[in-house]
Image (cartoon, rainbow, N blue to C red; front, side, top):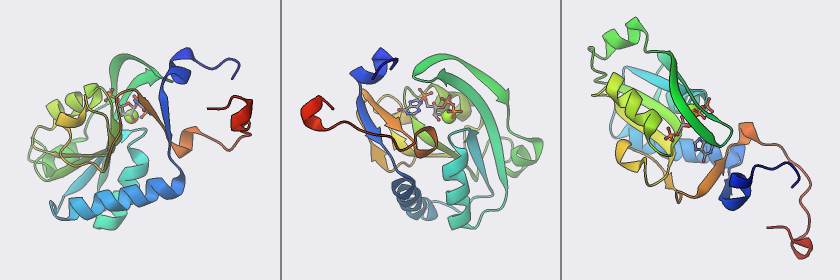
Length: 171
Ligand SMILES: O=P(O)(O)OC[C@H]1O[C@H](OP(=O)(O)OP(=O)(O)O)[C@H](O)[C@@H]1O
Ligand code: HPA
Ligand SMILES: [Mg+2]
């Protein structure tokens, strides 16, 4: 496609629909239900907000906080920027180390974001919906692993569009 980033076309694509994402979040919650209860859910923004809402709903957790981190500009990772840390109230609930807190993100890729959050809350439980091999050791619970050269396309980042037939060269 004209204008497409070369690193995008070189990678395998793993598109996720809203339905599939909801199902995967519910599957994640089944596993987390065995580990909890949790005092609060900490969503890593922005991608963690969507699974955090679903997981918190299923687990009956009403206290939700955010850690706001930015790193990727589309598919290129830059330096991590912590725009907002854990609130004082959530810190208190986690006894200062994160015990009994559930950190939720959409995925771990290189694990840089996860590592940073784990340093903030070393005793928290870290859950993601998807994991790539490099980040996987940082996660306590996840649902689906994809290869490192796969790019996951989330439903909030995508829209329905025309796709050319395979015989015309479509991948
Ligand atoms: O394991 P890593 O290599 O650190 O990558 C994983 C992180 O990257 C993405 O967030 P991003 O920084 O793009 O921000 P966003 O959630 O606002 O999209 C994703 O949501 C994870 O938080
Ligand atoms: O595979 C990915 N998909 C979407 N966002 C991401 N941020 C890091 N890796 C990914
Ligand atoms: Mg993120």
